[in-house]
Length: 435
Image (cartoon, rainbow, N blue to C red; front, side, top):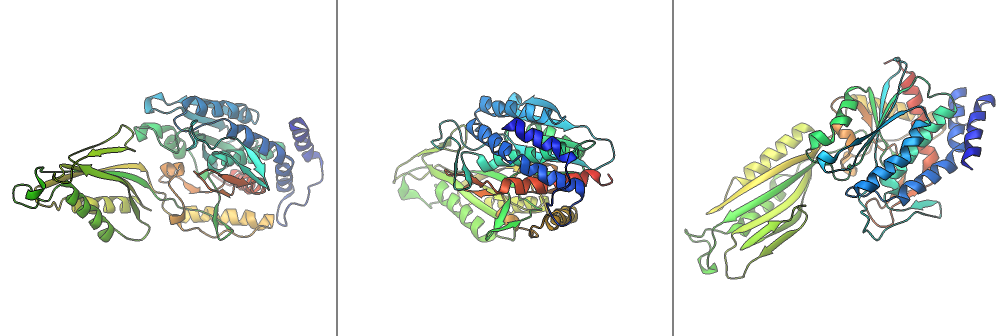
């Protein structure tokens, strides 16, 4: 089946251009037809990727997915490198480079190999039901990788990849970035500095069934709060000697966050909290053990959460407000707030919006509806944000679907060729544009 599909693609150049959209050139019509001819291959590849577990902490599984993809890129003329990332506690990244002719825009295509589903998760396997492909990571981000390759295969089949300057970075730790972050994202940041345009192949955005464009992503910042107080018999609480105790101080701080922090484009959350006579977080900081008694003033209280912002300035401003709230200690208590900036924001820019306009030109020429700009509150953090300071970008070039990060995650199979056409034609036009 795959050889027949490949043969059909190679014959496209000798055939009259098929009608594929009202505004497409002859070559663009061949690209569109090549996407259709490769649809079965795209679904087959998606199935192979999903069947191989690649939870972020399954380092061997993440590398196995990279090994599945390596020959796919090499067949299209890419030089492929596997970058091990043991020094960050993660598997590694797949980097594929297609040498250009020095003329067109330099493109960076971004996706990821890992999923949130580790090998012990009960949600396993790949199946097709009623026009949907279902499986762990099928949308986030294996569907996006399948769309990316379908687009590149179509460009290759239509002889439209020649001379295109394209770097692909598929990270192995997007769902939980390795530490230190600077080391974990150094290759991606370097690729961004060399590019003119970045396209992110995570899930396509939707609002009320309408496909949307995305020009911004918010940051992901993790905070940990440790509160200490005096301890003793509860009959002495609020006294000059014992003060208010650690848990009342924790409650004050969290209540102040809720009342004083809200502003546009900001969300913040408390994901874990506890305290008592003793308390501590485990190594992953995802579990908290606490012990105490009703008649003992608590000596320690801990909380951990996140906050998400739309610009670096907002990140700094919100962090400063949080620190000021923490500093207003109740009697005989003290607290320390630690903030870790995991993913930077990708602010909406004129350059990003110009790219969305170019994508909408592709939509018009394909006979597809124009995409509006989705509210960044509707998208989480992602890898493209690490290059947002250096290059214009678009988000959501991957497959359409739902239930991301949950049992029953799915993609709509008819979205694969539609998104591959959009991506292939946008890549083609950008690669033809003056650098």
